[in-house]
Image (cartoon, rainbow, N blue to C red; front, top):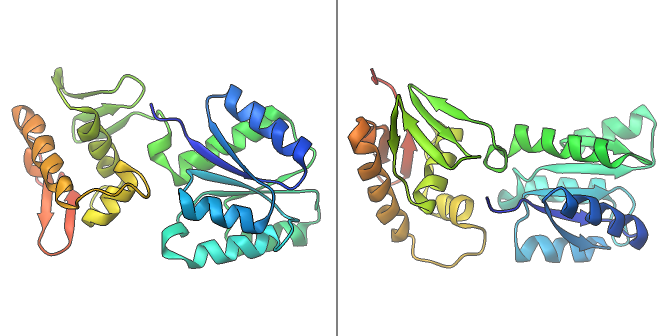
Length: 232
């Protein structure tokens, strides 16, 4: 699987590097930023899968950055975990009210940090987890990269697999072509929007033998969604 990209925003070099070492050892990709300006530049370049955000930073606080990112459409759903030495309840409330998904008080153990990251990813970024997804008999297993309907395996290419995975983790939602390009192909990948149509067609062909092709619906003028309403 593609490694989960974590943006570590921490102005203490020793702490930042220690966090990065533990992340890389656990299989994550770690990108470091030491200030609010660097964090914004890193986020503008490539949208990460999750941000570990220190409260006190040069240029702006982590709470201010969280509010800013929550207000921007591109980063509105970005999972954010605040790191801080502030242990008072009012500070925790302020961080969560700003839009942080979780709050971790320093000092913390590597085990607790990784557990919190996995928990946030499960809640906010199902594409990053290995959780098996099932929908009316269609079973997708990210860890083995296999899709089954009953005992029949569906043969999907890598892109069709990622596309189905994203659709199944967001059932009934309509996704525009730009949204699918961003979430499935990757942020800042410049390819034609019609590429989505090609892979949707291939995905339907792969699901045809198990009578699930009709689940991938075209919503005229808007995009695509997956629905199993009316499925046996």
